[in-house]
Length: 159
Ligand SMILES: Cc1cc2nc3c(=O)[nH]c(=O)nc-3n(C[C@H](O)[C@H](O)[C@H](O)COP(=O)(O)O)c2cc1C
Image (cartoon, rainbow, N blue to C red; front, top):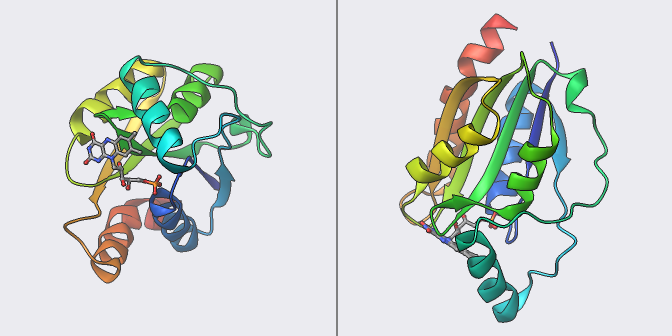
């Protein structure tokens, strides 16, 4: 069975983890592209403000259809203990009924629990198959790779 790894990444950390997951499972990748400019200091400030206000955003058209997949990974950077608006927009726009969804996030150090619980509230129909939080300040690349490889093991053997 084919899996899809959907993610948003402003500065590349979540993209790295998404690529590790996709590499392990030979899954397809879908990068969410926010139409709002979030580069630089102004983009950082705007992003924090949007996250705190639980804002959604407009996405560039998606390349893949989640309906084609049974197992969908959704990854976000933690912004003010919340998912990024692009990920909120994705979850709000999808019908994930009957899907298995696994969540992952990257962060400097904290905020994963609130982030995951907000994400889960956005798609109550789907089964949450797993959660992985990566604290970039606490782990190096090889530690992250090892943890990702372990985390995806159940999906490797089952599917
Ligand atoms: C607006 C904003 C808010 C953030 N809030 C948090 C936070 O609450 N907790 C935390 O540990 N890191 C926080 N960070 C750091 C990011 O979560 C972290 O750098 C993440 O790995 C970035 O992922 P990316 O490179 O895929 O964009 C924040 C970053 C931004 C831009």
